[in-house]
Length: 339
Ligand code: NDP
Image 1 (spheres, rainbow, N blue to C red):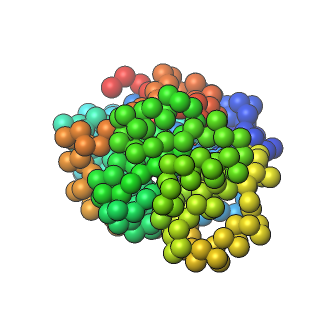
Image 2 (image 1 turned 30 degrees about the vertical axis):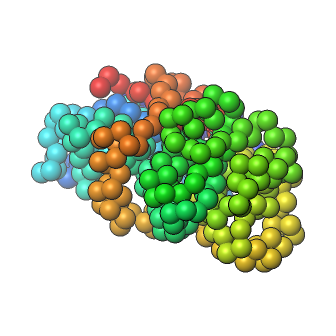
Image 3 (image 1 turned 90 degrees about the vertical axis):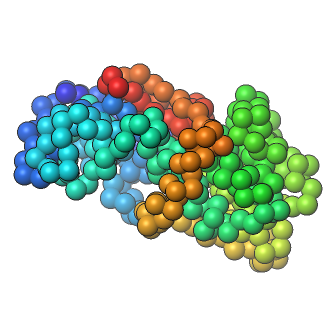
């Protein structure tokens, strides 16, 4: 068996030296436990936060410990009544080819319902995040204009299509013309702004104003940086901001970007804005409602999605670091073993 562990705490931007691929012997499953062979590993921006030793909403990964992460795997042995060899299940087993987990911490998947890896993206945590953000945090209404950053990523893909289905006008921000084309032609965004073509917050503000001349009612914030700077200057009175992530700042870089501090604060006041941070752990009770609504939309193609697949666990560190800089196109996945 093999796995990826945290080798060092990143100093600023994470590097390949901070992660180590190594062999190990997996234990045998004990009472109530299940042994799994990993098929798919999900790579997500939050993992960057787990590499730091700072206080956050979740415990950091310890040095030498397997990197945290959700996987889809095949059950190879089971001491739990709900699981049998050959079952496909998802859980937080980490960046590892084999794992042993309490059966109570796993969820069985039905491979006939959707491709099993959808449980890591469009029908999993990122999809739920998007759906909760649009419905419960932004409280989006038909006719409103929404702005969504990281528009073609795992979360943005679902946020854009769910908002569109509600009757919103939806503007995306993405990195590069290819992603922007995909946003408008495949995901149904009404417009998409290439942030690479807009160097700073002022340019972003002008670009947003051009495609959202009536202003922005709801901003789904995934990135921070110059995109936030541009967004804040286009918000309508009583607009809402769902603070979901700020990936532009996860490595401590670009902290000088944007109108942070006084300008942000002044706009919050004068435009009478509501900004609400949310962490999806607090919203798992919404998962059944989310699946009821979005799973049929995925099944009949009303919600489409794209995956960025890397073959082989040993390449997960590079795929992860690339994703933090926009190297992914859609949900970032590692195929660890054969389906
Ligand atoms: P994505 O698939 O969207 O991948 C990250 C994307 O961020 C990149 O593809 C890139 O897209 C964009 N990006 C990176 N750097 C910058 C930058 N400097 N400026 C603008 N965009 C940048 O990841 P996810 O969909 O999984 O996650 C999206 C966000 O949602 C993250 O911030 C994540 O932390 C957050 N999140 C929060 C949750 C919560 O509970 N609050 C739960 C899940 C996710 P591009 O090339 O288009 O710039």
